[in-house]
Image (cartoon, rainbow, N blue to C red):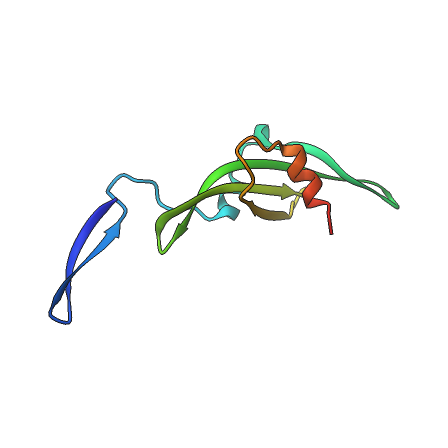
Length: 111
């Protein structure tokens, strides 16, 4: 992070900005669509009347941004439907670091 000074109404103010070379924020939908198939895990969420309800899941530790600056670190859990045109569902969680994917899968199936 770098600080940038500027004038506003006769006074000096300081604003934090991303330093050159730091990663820019990425939209979660872009992240999910570009993620290699290797990182997706197929899990059964529940048993439906027409058979098991199956999705693919992945989880990543990400840093949320606020006003274009890093804010706080959380889990991003992504659920992807199966098929040629998958649909994506995104979950944000402040669960502890050691939380397993199975816990997030279970939570995603709760209504």
